[in-house]
Length: 109
Image (cartoon, rainbow, N blue to C red; front, side, top):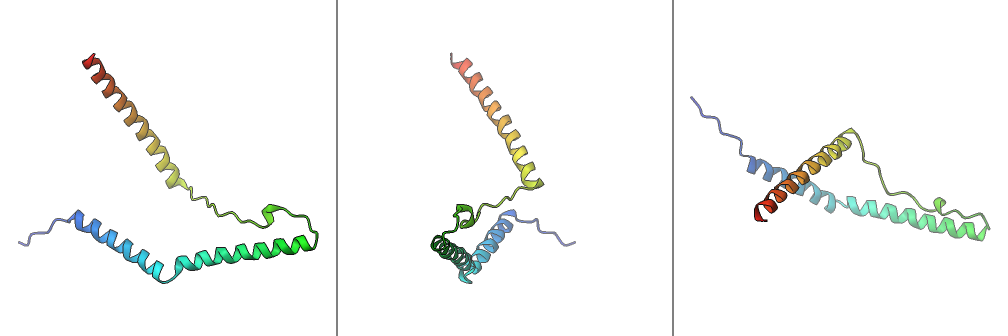
């Protein structure tokens, strides 16, 4: 009978990290990030030109017309649940650590 090899979690994790590294390296070398930055720069240059034109035309100027919001809301049910669980774990751990220190303090004094 053939013996099954147990999965080696170290090498699986190492392979996953290597895959992530290669993916990010390819994205960097292909110019993905440079194109994203160039697009933002182009939008900024267009906004500056529009601002200057509006000043020349004596149009009312509002800062919101020339800026764009780069903050994205990534919240969803998964992130909300993770935040809830992490806050509960934090409360549990901090109260447990406080109790341990209180016990140690009572033993020393």
